[in-house]
Image (cartoon, rainbow, N blue to C red):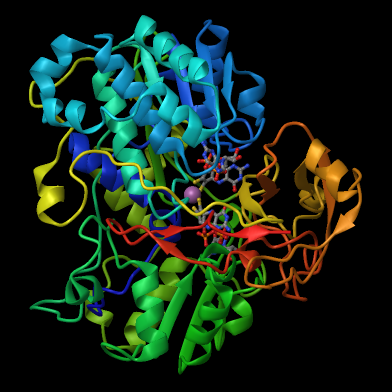
Length: 565
Ligand SMILES: Nc1nc2c(c(=O)[nH]1)N[C@H]1C(S)=C(S)[C@@H](COP(=O)(O)OP(=O)(O)OC[C@H]3O[C@@H](n4cnc5c(=O)[nH]c(N)nc54)[C@H](O)[C@@H]3O)O[C@H]1N2
Ligand SMILES: Nc1nc2c(c(=O)[nH]1)N[C@H]1C(S)=C(S)[C@@H](COP(=O)(O)OP(=O)(O)OC[C@H]3O[C@@H](n4cnc5c(=O)[nH]c(N)nc54)[C@H](O)[C@@H]3O)O[C@H]1N2
Ligand SMILES: [Mo]
């Protein structure tokens, strides 16, 4: 803000959930977070969401409560995930075809008048046009595209219809898969609308959280030119910031202007972004790279200066707020600043100290809003009439009565057709865009979370590495037999561009994955030798993701378009 650059890119948007947020905004005008009332759902519907391996504790609690309460679970995943293992219907879909599946469900529900007609009448916009536009998506057509039985698509649709509106259509989280993801996320939001699954028990229900104050750096005054996205007039539904690919390309080509310095703060773009060779090119042409991290990683190898941040156990941290909104009869709100357990070790400094010292040297000393993290927290808490001292006296967490989150706003509009999208040159109704299929002799590389690790951040944690020290590659049992592979065999992988993994891993032979893909956990195979525990353990999925797919609406990176043998 203060320097005035637009070129800020967060992995959590452009390589994760940004597509989801803006696709829902283009449909219901609000980002969905993961606001599904799973605890009270009659049916939970997951599309490539593998809760239980993907851990967010509060979400997991709601999900487990839902199962305990007898909810039926539908899991759409080419792999037999932990969630699939608990499901009533597992749909082992052909990777990349989910939008076709969703369109067929919607078409079937509409054709057979099994949708929430009153809700659609009251809140829908462009319904007729969408109904007309997706007519071609019969169960049979989708079955052929998705490589699953038509009867199973019907079974899913009927189960949703029989239980609407109390269905949790999970909006997903990591959704940058194929560069066609905005359309799939739009289809999910439209399906939610078709089922009337907003604001009622078990449906999409945004919680009413507590309000705290905001403190920030002043924005640079006056016009700042040089927004790469605006200059290129692309990605009109970009999440906040600049699509990473635009920044990387500008840095490499020097056009429309050179980018010669960068700050990488708590991100690891070497393993987060596809096409590592391009990332290296970008970094090598920089005059200056600053990294702020808690350990040496593959990105810090490229730092001119590496500043050591305090770890989360050594610092005051941002305030966590939320609600216990869906399984206590009483709705509760909480406000909880994270507090240090130990003093910072070695030369580690908290992020506010680092920012302020840099700001002073750059001549922005007079703009510094707070001196310490504690001061920041106190100022934010003032917005809720609280102080840090008070919260400490309350045992570290402040709990207050919450508000009933149920009910549908009269203003809610579900844009089945979005004219503005059309004006910007994108499909106005959810549209299926096929992706390339694996060439002969190759399998699609898909990846996901390890339940015990967090990306590569835990690769130097000796306890977690003892629990899981590498990332076996899941290979379908019939395919393994054809390839002569046995459980535990050590392999390397080569992708369609001839890029070979630097390291090896073992094979996990299982019927729990389709034959056209292989699966591995993300975050392994780090190459920084200073990562004394984690270096060269397992295979880095990102090193094999060399073919880039950019989502036209958002500029986010699709990462499941690569094939390996
Ligand atoms: N191939 C592939 N790519 C992916 C994904 C995938 O599954 N496969 N997942 C995608 C998703 S969903 C996301 S959200 C992104 C995540 O991408 P990133 O946000 O880049 O996440 P990490 O890889 O964990 O990198 C975090 C970095 O921050 C450092 N760090 C940890 N704690 C602290 C701290 O307290 N302070 C500071 N300053 N640094 C800290 C870590 O050491 C690490 O270097 O990656 C995306 N990219
Ligand atoms: N333990 C742990 N938990 C985490 C994290 C972590 O690092 N560790 N990271 C957190 C973050 S930032 C995020 S974004 C979430 C990510 O969690 P999720 O949003 O659940 O995303 P992924 O882990 O990428 O999901 C991978 C699943 O998608 C399936 N899949 C692959 N291709 C397709 C396809 O074409 N169609 C369908 N339907 N499914 C497909 C895979 O088989 C796999 O089961 O996890 C969060 N939770
Ligand atoms: Mo993420």
